[in-house]
Image (tube, rainbow, N blue to C red; front, side, top):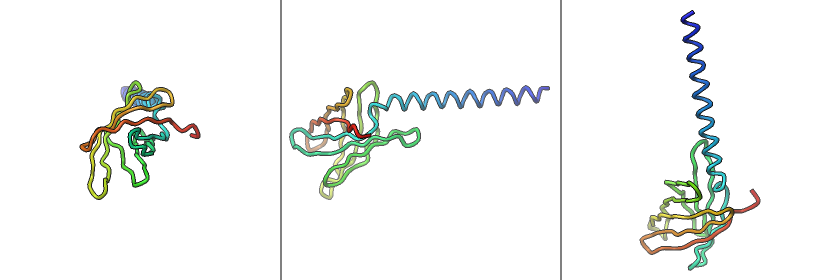
Length: 131
């Protein structure tokens, strides 16, 4: 009888842990829903066009910056309550330029600024609707 109680306790504990984990992952995915997808972005002063692409890889939020001369993986991505931050290391003509970015997402629009050693660059963009 004690063995059956132990087994029942373990099964209950495993199911509770599974439901809790699934709930956390669903809440996390719902939190990222406004961010996920492809964003067409322009550096306003330079007129440079690029894309930000955000995806879920399992339970990890990933991102990529794509532009004519290359791209970069986005790192340290944080997205809470419409506020986005990330870092990236961009190949800048043979040298690597680090950047930090802060942005605000409101519905289908993104506005923000990238901070680099070469100066700050404001950007604006919209989320693609074909996704």
